[in-house]
Image 1: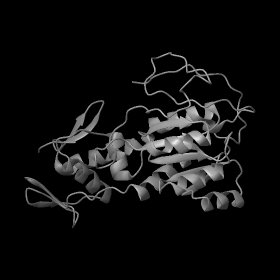
Image 2: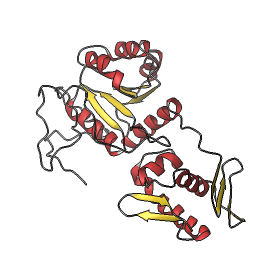
Image 3: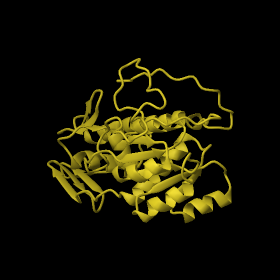
Image 4: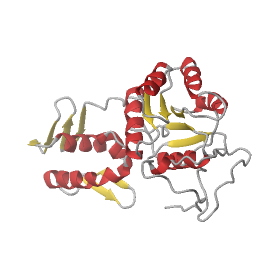
Length: 288
């Protein structure tokens, strides 16, 4: 269900700035986008007690191949509108997301997150110092956001302990792709079972060969990955977002149309009863 919120008016951003990073002239305390908000309800007013502290984001599907809770991203950003927009985009892509407005809050709240998205321009502590302190506390992945697109800023951020550094004006697709890339390195997917036998369908994960009724079925690489993913968990319904994460290593929802094409190809090669559409949810494995 799509939920709507009443948007606070704000100045129009210059063309060079990305939509989710409009920084007004005066910073206001950041708020965390709530997990559930009734349709039409107004956003919390800046400065409302508790809104700058971490909060669980909207519920999401399990992480790829494990069924564990969705990965959590902590947004550290001193501007309320920017923080709220970043949290909302992350939640739409299946992450649990929350935000804090200061470096001091980040040093306390980061323990509950899997990744920190750290703006280096903070109202209390220098962002590079926050990055150094976060890195000293462990190996949690950090992506820093620099206001200026200069080599020096990127070098300083990386030397302070960031795993990646992006400029504040980068687009949302690039930001999400960088988050996915860092999380792939730090949270690798477990290996699936090598061989799956669902007589008369046999799937060999080692040789990547498929046979049906003893006859080989020629599949493309992604067709095989999609079939193997569904067959590895035959009793579960997997959403398009889960399948995009497991097979295509992305949570970008707009790309999910490609799943329909691959499902159609698999049905043509295996028979229409092997992959079942669960309307409004996703797909599950059937029995031919």
